[in-house]
Length: 189
Image (tube, rainbow, N blue to C red; front, top):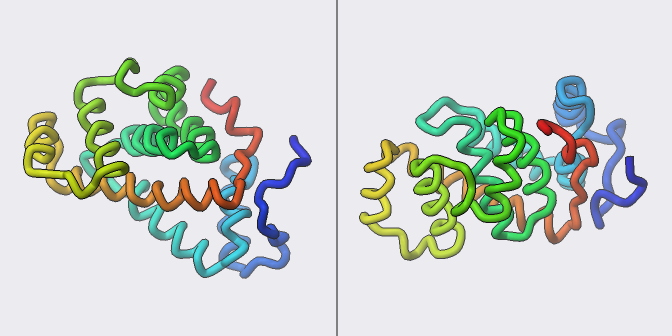
């Protein structure tokens, strides 16, 4: 464990948190073995943490045409493009576990175009990068390309939603200097 700060902002102690947030974090700790620093950092503003967790779960935990591994792959690729160390490391760990592949997270974080992924996943990530960097240029051609790979319009919304949400998350992590938990580096390896 490191003794370096996890955020440039004050991090409240668990005892000082509202009960619902404390219970949520302790539940995550029980399941994962640690509390991800994103929760501790964003607990600086409890109402915003509640909204963040609710939107995260609405996007990342639902059943749809995207697998949970697909969603994590979108997070890793767009977070890499946004230079977000916290999200690349933490969601890279989750991707390795959900994809049952110890290499995929490093491959897509470095260059998804050369990674060992399917053409469907590449099309999904091409679209995610377009939404991340030039959403104003999304056109019917982009929808048609994704439909040719079996994505529904609802799946396309999900790709864009995950991309946009993690654009926010990446920026929050970067400006707070959020540090990834050491535990993430070895998960799924």
